[in-house]
Length: 264
Image (cartoon, rainbow, N blue to C red; front, side, top):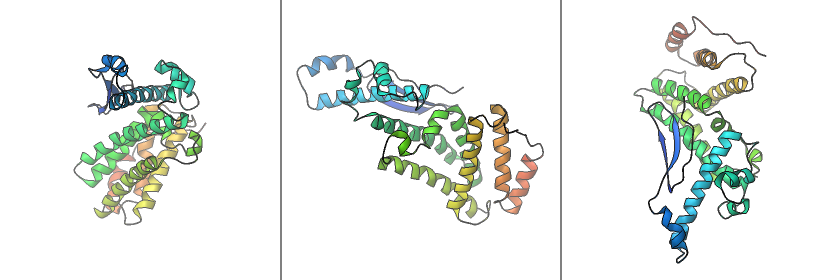
């Protein structure tokens, strides 16, 4: 089972992936934390800046927890203030509004997702990196459904006119990751030559669409059955863009006993 993302009082944030592939988000207590209220009575400047940064980290940890617990519909500044243990107006010393908080939550979602995907790069061959990336994508989406969901939110769903430039850059890097996996498989003769961007888009749309059908209850199967269906369906798609030798190997290995699903 994946470890839940949780927060603890403290000053320094760290993000880790354990051996089982779970993403944890926690805070390490800073030894000088208990002295800050006394120090702030006498000095400002850099010390105050450190304290404000510490408070913002606490708010972000609580915001992550609140979003993962209640989703976007259940997220409010009032609930966040209660979870942090402050009044709602106090939050605005650190964030301009709900939109800014959600932008930071989205940044954390991107970091969590890429911590999963980048493990696939450790594999020695293009084929293994390609397969590993698909497996890590599915693991992340099923283990952290709300993290996965927020990655697809548009600015209007978050109350913004447009997403911040750094979040757009994170999205672009994520898309480039998939394009690179496809391109190196084309170069290695595993996939047929073509436009790697269009091929990556086709694969992503297929995977994302299946996950949406499953998450919205349209497929009458449990998680283990969905994993099998996801793999088998992906193989059928890849056989259409693979070289003959690789397509034959995939068909022999995966398509003998295909799982079924009935649409509701």
